[in-house]
Each structure stands twice: as structure tokens, then as C-alpha cells.
Length: 175
Image 1: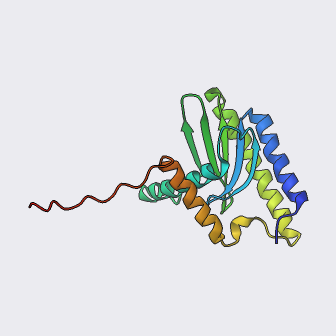
Image 2: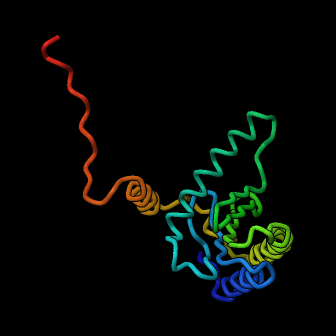
Image 3: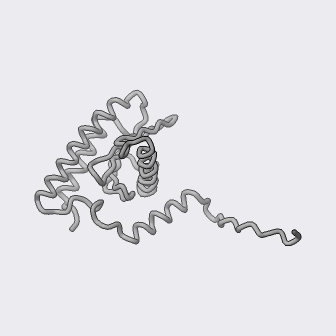
């Protein structure tokens, strides 16, 4: 069962409120499997599906780092770049919220607004679940076509267009 248009609109409104409150550039709501549920704000400079797949992989890697130091996982990741920064937070068991922003001075504002947004999103999903609807595609098995798409996106990111895979080195026949 798909999420209702009404609930999609409510979730998009919550994410839009986050952009306004935090002055962020872009917000994505994604699953831990790398599926984009919603993208709000300016996405003209990125490929949301590719970013979601990479963030999911990054979060999986940091989960292993957390385990190594005795934590279950980290609830928030912050990456600071020269011009753009990314704040990633867990939402419940299966979702992540990605906030992209440009002013590093606003990290505190981003964290506070993201925390409030997470509470509002969880409440929206709880209302949907109480109404007897599926809470999000994140809890459904990941479609094989999406897995193939995600792998192709990752391949495209890491290989140049038109470049073929290097052939394995051949053993020197003179030795």
C-alpha cells in the first residue's frame, strides 16, 4: 500500500518548515537502504538518488565504526566542506534525514531544527500507522529494480563515461 497524497503533503510540509527554520539549501528523507522518499528545496545541483545511495553506504560504514568503539550506531553525522555541509540524522529505525546547508555558522540552528523535524516526522508516521496505512516504503522489501538502479548509479559515479574496466594484469610469459 502506498502512502497517501495527504500524508506525503504533510511530510513535505514538515521538511519545508525545516528548510525555512534552518535556512538550509536542501533536505532529503531517505531510507537506510538508500531510497529517496522526499526531496525538498534546491536539488538542481545534485542527483538525489545517487546521494541517497552513497549516504546509506556511508551510514552503514559508520555503524561499524560505532560498534568498534562500543556504540550501537551514531545518530547524527556531520560532514563539513569548504562551501557546503551535510547533516545526517536517523529518524526512527529505518529512515535518515539529510540536510545540506552552506553557512557553517548555522550548525546549531540546523541541529535544533532537525531535531524538531524528526519529532514531527515520527508523529506523522505514527498517525499514518494508526490509520492503518503502511508507514513508509522503508519497511517494505527493497525492490530488485531499485537495487540494480542503485548499483548502476554507483558504477556511474566511480567510472568515467566511456571508460572501460582495466583488464587484469597478464602473467609475464618469459618468467
